[in-house]
Image (cartoon, rainbow, N blue to C red; front, top):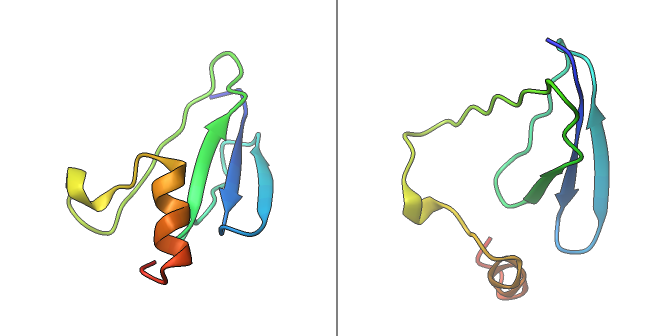
Length: 75
């Protein structure tokens, strides 16, 4: 494997960018944070794991919805 990509992690107040460019690096993103994956280079690959079976209802798809839930203290 080769390649790289960036992950932007956002807690609703601060954003941090992590560059993953080694096949042996990983990044744990806990629940309650927004994340964006950008800048994929040629031959890059991302593998994601979850602690539960996939359910569409468990995911927030819009950043505005995320910010509202954070403001309301629901996440």
